[in-house]
Image 1 (cartoon, rainbow, N blue to C red):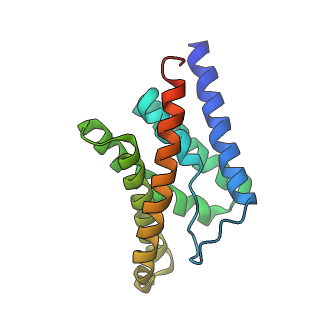
Image 2 (cartoon, rainbow, N blue to C red):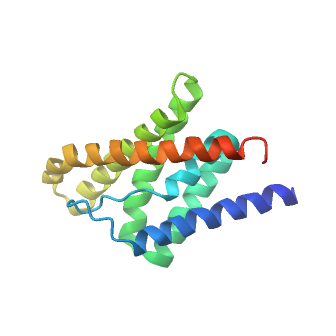
Length: 162
């Protein structure tokens, strides 16, 4: 059990570091709320190498801790909405065993933005935010693809070591 606790702590630390780096580096894509999603790299790798329970735990803890450390209550709300939907979709696709890691990550990127868009539209009671959907879906595809490629490479290097 000590070993599992240690590697969960290590993955949570890595996810928080990714969140922190992302908060420092201005990845501005022209649309509010679009981010690279570096912390999702850790979640995708864990989903494949460690299992869904560990990946879900790290995802939820990272969202809460990063929100308290680097964000605000609204960032926690938006990230939680996007994170839960994204994780659920990635888990369903991964479980079918018909999709590769990159495809699962792309779906995660897209649905993270969809979840955030729904939460934002409910929070501000303005459904005109859905005009951003095409740009957010394209951004989710692009960032999900990049994170998926990195996750595939990282998982290949870590496989058998955990």
